[in-house]
Structures are given as structure tokens and as C-alpha cells.
Amino acid sequence: MGIAVRDEGSKVNSNINVTPMVDVMLVLLIIFMVITPMLQNKVQIDMAKVNNAVSMPDADKDDAIVVAITRDGGVFLGQDKVATDQLGAKVRDKLSDKPGKTIFIRADARAQYRAVEDAIDAVRTAGVEDVGLLTQKKEGNLAGGE
Image 1 (tube, rainbow, N blue to C red):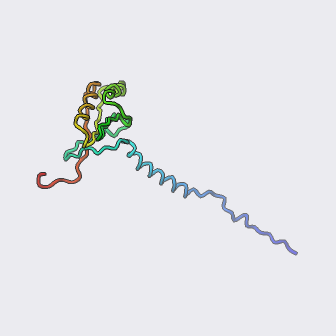
Image 2 (cartoon, one colour):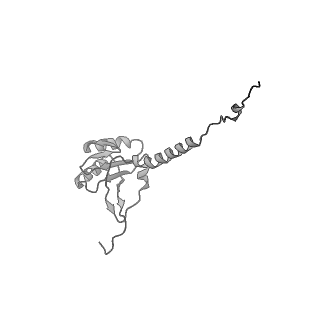
């Protein structure tokens, strides 16, 4: 009687297939690249739409100081809600190491003018010379001079 010798152990592939892992990592990278810019401005505001919007690329930088005014009159410094009377002191604290910096105001199109004016006054009394008002460009042109 003969012994049957099987040599199936030599057919086993012990290499790790990393292709599925690379696919998952690329999908995660794309998701994070799309979501990250949306996280910059957590305060939801419908900015005023104008025909001749001025581009302010400095407002998108990480160290930009943005004051947001919501429709109901809430004032936010970055993502933190602050009272209008405390806004000047908080801006002054942020500008202690960067004098001469521009402060950007993002106001809702339906915000009361008084709330926007109070926020600008508070920022100006903190010693800020340059205040930028952020707006959005209108989609399409209106025909007929409207």
C-alpha cells in the first residue's frame, strides 16, 4: 500500500491584498476633502446677494476673524456666540498679537440693520481700522435693468 502525498500547502498565497484598503482610504480622503470647507462656517447665514461682489480671499484663511450676525440678531465671533457688548473686548483679545488685521462681517440678508451696525461699532471701538462686509454674487444677470 502506498501513501498518497498531497502537496497542497505550496499552493497557498500568503501575501496580503491591500487594494481594498487603499480604495477605502481614497474614499475617506475624498469625503474629508469635501466636508472640511463646510465646517469652516458653522453659523448658517444667507448672505446678501449683490451684482458686483468683491472677492475677499483673506476671509477664507484659518486665522481670519469673522463676526457673523444671524437673522434673529445673534452675534457670533467665529463659532462662539457672544453678546454685542462683549464683542469689542473679545476682538481686542484676538488682535493683541496681530494689529492692523481686517475683521470680516458675515450678516444674514434679513438681519436687522441695527444689529449689524452695533456689531460694526463694537469692532471699531476695539481698535480695528479695516472691516470687510462679506456678500455673495447673484447667480445670473437680470435683464431689462431690474
